[in-house]
Length: 237
Image (tube, rainbow, N blue to C red):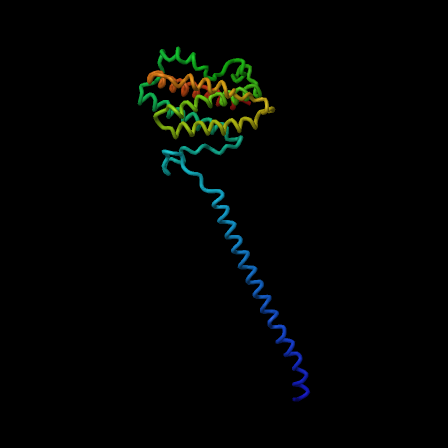
C-alpha cells in the first residue's frame, strides 16, 4: 500500500463512520416532522368536535335560517337588534290576526288589566321630555326581563310559528346583555322574583280558547309597544 493511499485511508474511514450518524439525524427529523403533522391534524379534529356548527331552530329550513339569525350582538348593533325583534313580533301578530281574527279589539282591554304587562311611564324617564339615559336603560332592561315569563307562556301556548317565538325570546336575552354593558351599575338591575313568575304562569294556564288567544295577542301587542319605546329611547343622546 502506497503512502498516499495510507494517508487517505483514515479520512475515508472517518467519512464512513459519520454516514450512519447523518442518516440517523435525517430519520429523526423526518419522524419529528411526521409526529408534528399528526399532532396538528388530531388537534383540528378535536376542535371541530368540540365546537360543532350550531343546529337550525326546529321548524327552520336552510333557506330561512338567515332571516331567523339575529344581528351581531355588539353594543353598536342595539338599534338593529331591536328592529329585528320588532319585525319578528310583527310577523307573530299578523299570524294571530289572520288565523284567529285576533286584531285590536276593545274587549281585550279588560283582560289586559289582569296581566300586569311591562310598560313605559313618565317616571321611567324614557320619553324625550325628561329623558335620563341611566334611568331609562335600567327600566328597559328590567322590563325585558319581566317579559320573559310571558314569552315562556307564548312558547307553551302559541300554536303558530314557535320557532319565531323562540327567536324573539333569545334575541331579547341577547339585548338585555348588550344594554347591561351600557348601564353604570348593572348589578342594580332588578331581576323578577321566580316565585311570582311561577304564580303568574299558573294563573294563566286554565283559560278558554278565546281568552288564551286574547292573552297571546295582548302580550305581543304590549311587547311591540315596549320595544318601540325602547328603540326611540336608545336613539336619544
